[in-house]
Amino acid sequence: MNNFVFYNPTKILFGKNQIQLLGKEMKSNNVKKVLILAGGGSIKQNGVYDVTIKTLSKEGIESVEVWGVRPNPTLDHANEAIKIARDNNVDAILAIGGGSVIDESKSIAAGFYLDNLWDVFEKKALIEKALPIYTILTLSGTCSEMDPFAVLSNEAEQKKWGMGSPLLFPKVSVIDPSIQMSLPWHQTVNGGIDAISHTMEFYFLGTNEEITISMDEAIINTIIKSIDALQVDSKDYSARSNLAWCATLALNGNSGVALKGGDWASHRIEHGISALHPEVAHGAGLAVVFPNWIKYCASENPAQFKRFAEKIWNCDNIEDAVEKMKSKFRSWSAPTTLRDLNIEKSEIEAIADNALNIGNLGAVKPLTREDVIKILEFSY
Image (cartoon, rainbow, N blue to C red; front, side, top):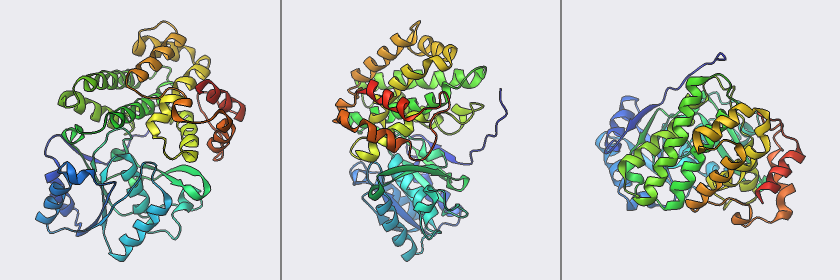
């Protein structure tokens, strides 16, 4: 195996009724006033909000609230929240939601101490200090609850870019699978495909890292099995909890041990799609792009791609595996073409340019503009 450094300081409270322990955790870290960040209000319908306020009040922790985080969270909304956080002199952020909410909370935590938040995404500034972050996860998929990364959209410039810092690992994250049972089906599927994709970004760089590769195969197979089970019974706690923990393992460092940091071309191409079409969910875009990236890049590490075909899809060649992968996604009602996302063929070049505007793309296979266009054409 290659040399590696593993570091993850996030404490996880996993299982039913764990939200009620969060106030005590925050008080032990001297949190006195917290900014609660949330999306559209579903947490007031499923009881999560009431339990959260109760655990904070019990420990004497004050709160101020910011609502309205969107899928594909935006720079403008993050800047509004930073102002509210400063005006109220909060000393921590509590994100209640899925990856979009948690990603924006990290941006706010860093931006609280910066003159210009977007400078971090442009790599013009460093994160030297950040507010502590706590999370209550309501949708599994991104692993933002246990990683130090965030993605934000600058709509004015049509840029969907990422950043990260060890200072942005959440202090404590609550993962209660029972609160995800009422999720709309497409959100469960998008989260699962995102988690599969995180694992695959590392997997295809594999050669002799047997423990990491075998664990990645177990993560992918368990996600597929869990989503199949949830399609039959959305309230299957065993399936829901296995899916939730797999989604966390997919990007908390474990799935990438010794795999050189991963590839991330498919994610960058998807960011090109959703930067131009913010209505496209990240997992939905990945469902379209990733199978065609596999098809395009399989010759670069043929033994590993063949192993993927055999271990995940029970096929003896990658072409059949990709078709079986697309068929599985369709059986979950996920999109598999750009047409399914209502994207015109005439937009392909603009998407490719957007994906490449940060710099070089790809590790399994370095991709040129022409390569990205071909992958998108396969995806059409």
